[in-house]
Length: 392
Ligand SMILES: Cc1cc2nc3c(=O)[nH]c(=O)nc-3n(C[C@H](O)[C@H](O)[C@H](O)COP(=O)(O)O)c2cc1C
Ligand SMILES: CCCCCCC(=O)C(=O)O
Image 1: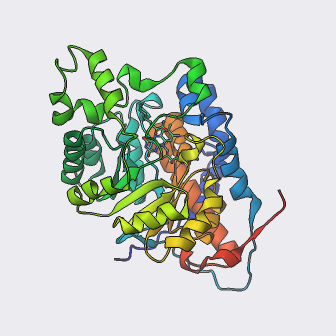
Image 2 (image 1 turned 90 degrees about the horizontal axis):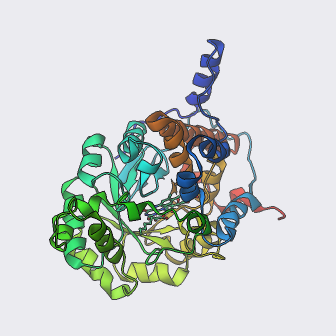
């Protein structure tokens, strides 16, 4: 089950060695600088879609301040010479507690889109979570990844035949974990997209899994290429179903053999219901602040969910992770692993597959060093005692 330990911090030495030969990294190693660079190079439409969040952005800001407010209390003299970031998640041996979050429509950022991001993840051994709303059909992404660890994110289609078809296709294409996103039964009020009237799906971008799906196409009067507008309209009506309730999860359990993880859980009672429904995990997430404006910060919700179900479910975390120390803090609050969204999307936009690799390597090198400098040799020894809450 265990993976061979990788020396993530070696990336630091690689960078310095390259520097002796006159080369500096193509992208900044402070990943918080990527958004601005991406906006300069790619323009406001696509980057506005990626960077944007719900309402005035208060949830996205709260995500950051909830992580920044928590401070690591380093320990010394603990023999951190040999380190191993590997963890077991949902029965899978991962080289580090990190996965790439499901992000739709990656083709707005780079023509190689999901395949480039998926190859980068595969090369680093990090799971890639493919969005239902990808610009590339799931089978093509699977082919790009070989045997590498891949999970499929479901936007639960209104039509059960389409839902069943997605699950069958994902299973057949080797996606091992189903991540069901529950926080987006409707698209939130997102002023940055509204002000630019920019929504790629309405142009048939990010609809590849639907337009390639036999059950979806069976609902169209004409083939997609003959009437693309009708296909888009069908997609908009199909994409999600706000009338779903907890008992509906039985359908997914019935049609998916592997682990099922519910994404977008913030309340301990919802986490308890996930246990009752036979789910395997939850992602404590507020969708990177893109859904409920004024929502609780994901890092503030994490301890309550861990306390409620941490001994019965795998608790994952996302929303606001930008650095290795953010990952450390999420682990200290009880997450088993974290998902990262926007940083890798900016890396993709700026440099394709190498840009995504850069982001993964920076995050994990920084995590490795943070672990060592805080007195830990493995993620397993990190806990709440490693954190304090600083002022403001
Ligand atoms: C442009 C964009 C598209 C997204 N698309 C999806 C999606 O298709 N499915 C999904 O479950 N989450 C989606 N998310 C949310 C991410 O999975 C994740 O929860 C969020 O990005 C984490 O926050 P972070 O960006 O601060 O890391 C999207 C996020 C962004 C930024
Ligand atoms: C109408 C399709 C909406 C897909 C939403 C993708 C997403 O999760 C996000 O933008 O956030």
